[in-house]
Length: 405
Image (tube, rainbow, N blue to C red; front, side, top):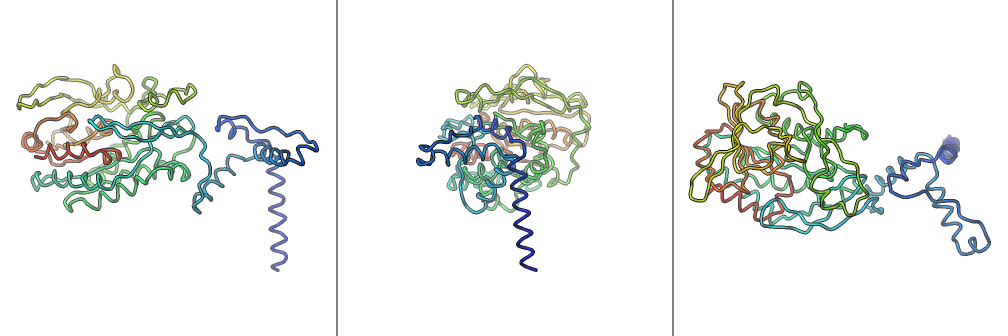
């Protein structure tokens, strides 16, 4: 019986090999690697003796078999699983990372299939400072204010293992910080929602969770974070399909500006957004607090979606010290305060559907006192929402500490 099994298995493998060999060449996978397929080498005594023919013939066969893309991906996954590191398809360039503070860090950018992605380097000593800053914020809040922490990973974290493993684990960073938070701070698992959505999304889908050449998430990506936060608050998220999906302007992104000299004229993507604004009745006002304690209000009735601004500035017009948004259709008086970086800007269009008031505080430009703002607004909830790279900037952690003093 075993003899028949081995024979049948051998014949099936042989038949599969013949089928793959004689199937039409998978030219798309070669084009995706930005090169031309290997040609059949010249057969001569010289090329046979030197080994040039054997090497060239091997490359020719590899490039001209059917299902090459699927077989390459399977091989990469197997090698990655067992600890091998095959050659990356794409390019890694050196760059700098800047989140709008005084600090600038050396980093790498991975250019892959028309995408530009930041490469994450874990910094345990700064992660500890980040967690301590959040615990300090918790300590100055009234006991009745529920506090949440949401750290958002970037798109490279959800690439195939061979690419994802070229950076430090963002998932591990988030888990380490969550473990250091006070028991009265609830961690929000945006990572899990994004991962599940990415795994279920068709590869050819245009509604990506992240912009291709920018470090931010899209409104679809932000919806994953919104769902995760609503799950923790016990509130029901709105259905994004209840809103009209509209197309904005061409979108390149900030990472494109850093990498464009290493790219071959990539096509811009379109900025898609769910038009929650036309369905609601919102009032928006911005405010700055000066060092002497004086204040200035501006931007009254500014739009949630600012079509006069390019790129990610489309959301709220960009970052401001304080932004207060009131939903006049909700009269329950519920308020959430968000301490944030720019990632929260694409999250806000979802949050405004659940709260009468959403208050945003950006520690990079806010010079006031968190305690005074809490007294002003009496929030029911406070969430710290940042993308994972903020945990590598020591001065950002110091700014978080400063507003809690």
